[in-house]
Picture (tube, rainbow, N blue to C red):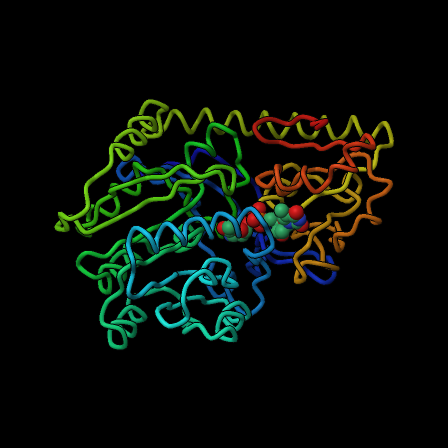
Length: 398
Ligand code: DWN
């Protein structure tokens, strides 16, 4: 049974940064109601409204993984680990974005899959064999014809974006070599619930996975989890290592059952846990609004740091507008001089002069807090402060 536990209100598409703010409409499919549900059979948490893929992932997708040093470092570490542990003759990445990970792999034995053509162009230009296509069964057949099978398939922050998970895993099984490994990493549902980071939900994040749900889904395809790593990216993610059940060469690590036990202990298998999360989310919204209003009454200047997809959920759910946030700063070229989705809040190019009068930064990219604080030592030294809503709305001094 699928039951709703959270209503995040009417939302625009998260990565649609407009050149000029305009009134969006539900009828035209520019706005939708963001509801989050729990499937008591599979334990999968998902949003209820599925937006057509072409509207989300096309030739103007602005997000680039290479914009963060944290992500680059995480990808480099993982690449070294993959090469050392699995020695793939052929490596394939689903959702290769701008090549932040595959740049660590040899052009000769790497295949990229990236449906956003503006991003696929980047890896193609660097010489990587790139399919500018959506991950589906037809594509897996195409790959099979050309390469026969793949030893390691990797997807970071990608499978959460694909509605038809059955087709995803069927397509993986179609090309994964018998002793092959599938590695996926995505924000952890346990961390999301613990931190009340309701902003992990938006149109692109159709799912936020638990190990429990991943285990249930892949089971249908003769796949099994053999290892899980906890990683700190994107507010706390899990990296799942998956193999065919019939592959006896790889042992199953205790970390799999440890993670699943932890999730069950926290109640990720129960609807009531998510109802409580819904209540905490409302509380978080009210506290953030009153904190921002209090600061505005003191005439403080508040600017958003990191024009993230997550910030779109927060701004539109909490009704935060240009009267509260003067502007956002971001380093991503395709977001600069545009407006936050659904809002009249402009996005400005990151530079230190632009924020000399700023009193508070609202952390849109709270998941990169460490990287940002390191970069903004001077701002902090001068008395500048940050506001976050994760794990609860508060001012952070340093
Ligand atoms: O799954 C997804 C993830 C991986 O990325 C996508 N659906 C969309 C996107 O989500 P997001 O926008 O919430 O992701 P990030 O990685 O939290 O975005 C960080 C943003 O902050 C980027 O626009 C870059 C910007 N940034 C910045 O301006 N200065 C980031 C850092 C670290 C900085 O110092």
